[in-house]
Length: 328
Image (cartoon, rainbow, N blue to C red; front, side, top):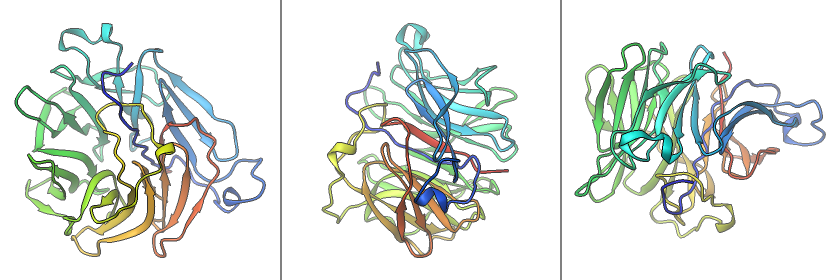
């Protein structure tokens, strides 16, 4: 059981491998084509190629929730968040911690642990050389929230606070720019960029009319940032039947979110497609011309240039927490 009130699930994607998508978009698909998807559902990590039955990669304890797995750049390790059973949480009380294991789930190690009750460490992102992770921490004391982005050195275990009042880290492929969402004391959100060398910050475009940011993902060439957000002026409501009630920290909300993109220099902000759903996730195709978008029950392929969208076969369990990993 989770310690939260009613929450919703965010699905995030990274492609494991990529075959021709043509057959995945229609007709018979007996041989399995298109991207191979890794996804977590409750306590199990699965692998599935479109058109084939899912295969179990590994399972954690029944009372544990597995969230947000991220594959290392060498493809050999996974980082992920675990909400352990209350009895296994130790003196810090219930919370969410970060672990690293081999891709098959063996040799699991705790790499960053919550320090306060109900503190959640989530959204792990690998450094380019796989020597460490960048992640968000959501915490609250009696008087205020303490949301921040931290970095942990996997060789020494040293944790460093990078950015205050920040969530949803996304590191550019060259490791130079960290995109994130700045959250003000009054809960206003702003899309920002952090220079990993100079530590300078700047807005990524004018996103003052957007809210409910999730799933920040850089294009393979690092020129564009795709993300999910809701338009403050939109009256569209997300379909109630497609909202999850699963994990912590992300409130269920009625705002319909869409697929957006902004250039690395802050220009060119645009709505790529009006997804109009609740907390979908996104990732890029390896060539940067298309985007995969997933929510707990649907899976789409979106053309980055035209914004055209087509639905793909999706046989995962409802409210699966989905990722896919880019090919080497």
